[in-house]
Length: 251
Image (cartoon, rainbow, N blue to C red):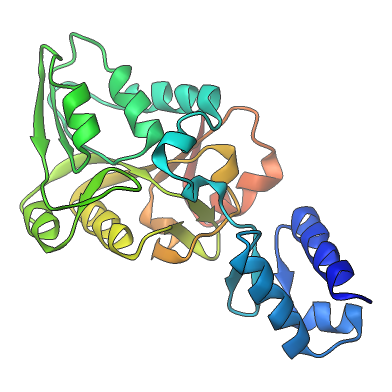
């Protein structure tokens, strides 16, 4: 079998099964595991999959630049954002992550909601500047331009002084066994720090993020108490998440 044929077969199996294992591919192709690992490395370099221990998972398309992601799954993200808004009670302190779904979340906050929004996203903070009854606390630090959020030691220090009711987390990958992941090392640190300061963490997960992985792990799937997904999400895609003990909310 030619290299190009093997790679196509790997991607077909990944699409069909949601994961591939190097030892199984080695047997199926009658080649060494080193050959399979080389194929996986090359496919990962092209952004077509995410290598994990023993094999590979689908790569999340949600690692694209912010402007490009604004037009991805926009209607699904809007429904997820609207469902997230329904979870916020008056008087709560709520952490809102950066990202395109978070931007839609703050757009949908009712004018009569009185609450405090903590965010490390300048764009989220600016979007709330004219809201009549939302207090905004903006976490500062080094600007990570890809997601337009603050990261770094200064941000972690500020986060350590927060006690929040809710944290709406944005991720690029949600997988029952690999966990929650994102495309930047420092951003993963910030998300862990924010989750540690909230009584409840809710992940906003459009379809492209489910059963996918990115290079930097935020934590186990159980770092989240709830995950909001699209109403039309197939049951087999969320069954492993529910089996892990995480509440799945359909929007």
